[in-house]
Length: 202
Image (tube, rainbow, N blue to C red; front, side, top):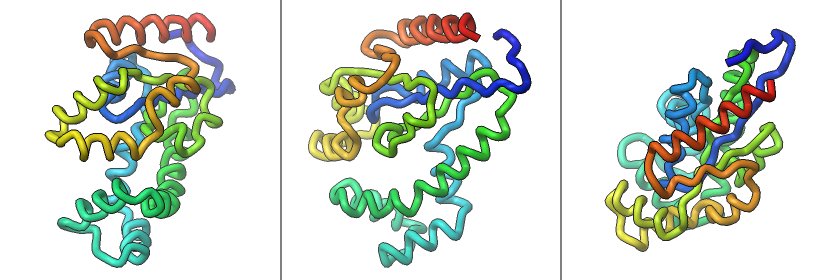
């Protein structure tokens, strides 16, 4: 990777996709190229585990404890009620965005930073990115992969998919599409080619 001026800003790449589309695999490929990845899901996980202030706000709002089976209860609520999901997001997202900004500052001298964010378009984060890359699979493949991966029936898998924007809607908005309907090697080749193009632009 070419050396970037200390004063230059990193290129911010938003990486997104539908649930079970293969975004985590794509993220791993970027990491293999020594490109730092800010993992939104990991940030959320860490906040639930360690950020007592955020957890207490959620507990106070929904009226039950999140520890133990409370997390499963909350998940069931938000996958079945869009209003409740938006209420939860309004509490959690400011903490998530704050952590992302901290990570961006820490990585400020890197040439490229990838932000791995499943709900990137849903929360309007595309405005913070120089380019948005989408990992794409057809909806029927997405459904099959989710059912297999999480051992869900079709009804429950469909509810989870429908809790996000459709992958076709995201495809129409993304700057770059990585087609993940064939092999991992094929996905690697697409991302390798994309990274070579970025390096040539620096």
